[in-house]
Length: 290
Image (cartoon, rainbow, N blue to C red; front, side):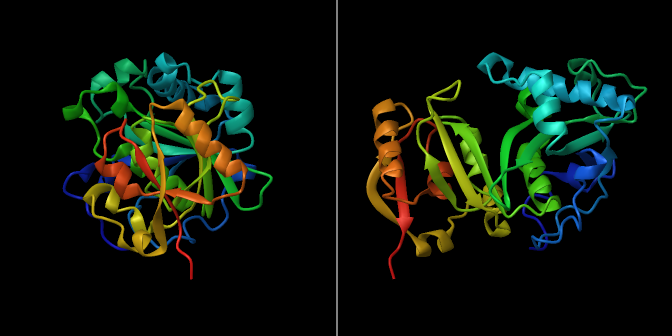
C-alpha cells in the first residue's frame, strides 16, 4: 500500500523530529523487519532502546507515566514487575518518540521528563508471542493523546503506533482484549477481520471484555482514517440474526455460549463499529457459505 490518506493531518509522521522507537532486548530483535506487509507509511529508521540497559531508565519511566496516567483510573494500569517480566523480557514494545527539544513543554511536565534526554516517548504498544505459532497477543496501547486536549493531540498517534509495530515485527496473527463500549474497539477493528473468540471474560478484572483475534492485513488500515466501507469484508462475510449489546451482560453471555458451542466463528464489521455509538448494539457476522 503506497501513500497515505492522512498526511495533511498527520504531518508529524513525516518529520524526522518524531520517529518510531523499538524498546526490546537484543535477543528479541525482529529479523528482517517490515517485510511481511506491503505498506510504505513508515519511512524513518526507528530509535533503538534496550530495556536491560539501566541507562535507558528515564525513557522507561516516561513510558510508565503514559501508561499509568492513561489507565490508572480504569484499574487497568500494569504494575512495574508486569511491564518487565511480561513485556520487556518476552515481548516487543514499540511506539513513537519526539525530540525533547521540539515537543511541547506541557508533555515533558506531564511525564516528569528531563530536557537532558534526546528522545521522549509519546506512545507505547506491547505485543508478546504465544505458544500458538505465529500468534501474538497485544495487551497495551496508549499515547499522550489521552492526556491532552483534542486540539493539542498528534493525529492518529495511537492507531499508527500499533500499525508500525505490527508492520515492523511482521505480525501475521494478532489477538487481544478490549472492553465493550470502549473507544479502543473502533481502533483495534481496523487491522484485519476481527473474530470474536470470547464475548465475556469473568477471569478478567473487567468481565465485560471482548477477546478477539485477527489475521493482520493492511488492506483496511487507511479506512480507519477515511471511514470508507470495507466492501471486501461484506463480500466475504454476511450478517447473522445475532446482535451484541455493549450494555447487556446477558447478551455477552449468550454470545459466549455460542462461541463455546462451536457455532462460529463470529466476526464484527469494522465499518459498523466506526459509524455507531460506543453503546449501540452491533451486528454479528459469519463467513458466507460457498
